[in-house]
Amino acid sequence: MSEDAEILFGVYCPPHPQPLLSPEANEGYSNLRDAYETCRKRIEDSDADIILVYSTTWPSIVGHQIQAHPEPTWIHVDDDFHYLGSMPYTFRMDVEYANGYQEACEKRGLHARTVAYDGFPIDTGSVVALQLLNPDNRLPACIVSSNMYSNRAETIVLGKAARDALATQGKKAIVVVISSLSNRMFTEHIDPADDRIHSSKDDEWNRKILEFFADGRLEDLSQLSREIHGQIRVQKVVAYKPAWWMAATMGQHNNYTGEVLAYEALHGSGGAVIALTPAEGSVGDKEFDEDDVEYYHGDRDVLTKGML
Image 1 (tube, rainbow, N blue to C red):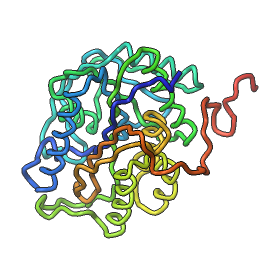
Image 2: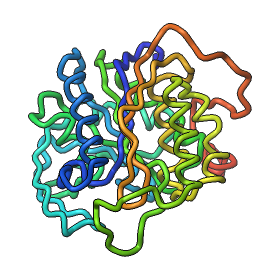
Image 3: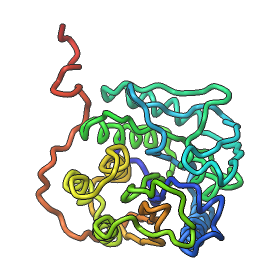
Image 4: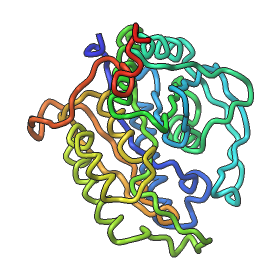
């Protein structure tokens, strides 16, 4: 069923608020803002039915949470950059898809639930992405959390469940993944004009990742993400999980046209806006080491049904 899902293109973007709240403070922030604008225009010109968001700044502990409030409204302030100001928001969510996604997760063995109550705090990354990519709520959205403890199998299945729900409902999607590249930030206030990638090693590995994206090698990134995580200092929630989920949701192959629209420093971390569009050609089919998985049975089968 999931093979019938239609993903028009994907966007990989950073979780920090500077491109939304202070794009004029640094040329790099302005470049990121322009890259968001490019993606916004492409979304508006598409015939997508939904924007599907996976955000690493919405961590969950038990299972997976899916935003299902039809119109979440609140005023958000970022934990790290509160001095930049408030981010009031009102979004339009696709409740039908959220419920369908939750059901698809359960069918594949995942524990998932919808969240739908007034005042639930939408995370910084989702607020920034939706306000810049979908400012008039022209398209409904769906946001799914990033489980802090999920392994590769669980995350891959979560992406496949997203495809299941899209195929069942016949909806065309724009996939948005919110994640840093390197995430080593300065621990003291800096002048935005002096912002830079925190270390040369971070910058080197960021650029290696961007080479894969530019070549459309999404599945290669998914397969190599453990190695990348071992070399670059990032939190687990923003390291390999986004690549796993994005590949499983969009399609586990390298048949993409990749565009790195901007790569800049955000208080020392690496932030990039990247577009991935399905294409006919492939960089090459390889014999991958990581296993594929269709259903989640728990870590080491501890959740296998029927066991005492």
